[in-house]
Length: 342
Ligand SMILES: NC(=O)c1ccc[n+]([C@@H]2O[C@H](COP(=O)([O-])OP(=O)(O)OC[C@H]3O[C@@H](n4cnc5c(N)ncnc54)[C@H](O)[C@@H]3O)[C@@H](O)[C@H]2O)c1
Image (tube, rainbow, N blue to C red; front, side, top):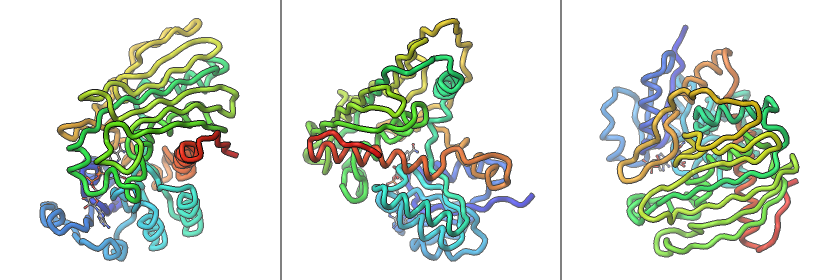
């Protein structure tokens, strides 16, 4: 069987992670890399096509899949351009910075008949897979309340070392860059959110970011449950927690750790959870850590989906759902009122 040939646009920390995972995946082959910084492109050792202009990469006939691993605010245009050039696309999270842009990405994917994958690798965390199974099989029963807590640390160096993180146009907000995985999991596990009411403040990053570093959100779900989402990047000196707790008719369960990587608590009627499989470690960026490093599973899913052996792990529609909730939260913060998502 022929290899699926990949090109990467944006060769920063996560672009390099895609490179590594493509190299490790059977049936995947990296053939081109683009980064607009000449020094970045000159530092690439691998013998592949290299360019600082992503349009040149899209013109390469041999490429089947483009990984869009550039700053958030560039995902939309690069994805649409790649789809129009007949490429399948793996778009890093967040899919885009507005629902309007997400919708155009989805429509372009449909009109060009090319696949659009969105990266949401935390869905592969073993405790999340278990929680999803318990919810889908009805073991937990009706959900009453969901509590999502994200208490991380992002210090001055994190923002000073980046020319886009913390900016409104290219980053978009703390929910887009730091916590979109948690919002995706809320949707993945519990379904649609139908209203949000939120408060946001910038307490400790006034010189480094254009938006809030702390937020509290209350929400209602279509399944009649209610919940809260509390987040901050001000946790003293280090990440403290990233968790989802569900209170349901037949049980209570908390998936936590710093990155939704451990089963912290459960008490479920007639249920014993056997030891879970070992998960991957988190993405380690040196002086800070990010989400779980499950990009191996993401690239494997791309290859298998394009070969007709699997379905997309996270579709573009699901990618849009995260952006829809984030947009509603920011709107609620702006107008200081409840916002309905219809
Ligand atoms: N899935 C995850 O857990 C995860 C983790 C980290 C980052 N991300 C996402 O990945 C994306 C990249 O994040 P990062 O931390 O690697 O950032 P980064 O700054 O390390 O890398 C971005 C790269 O894109 C390049 N770039 C900027 N404009 C470009 C252009 N016009 N053409 C080509 N290249 C361009 C930059 O030079 C840089 O090398 C972001 O959207 C981020 O939200 C996802």
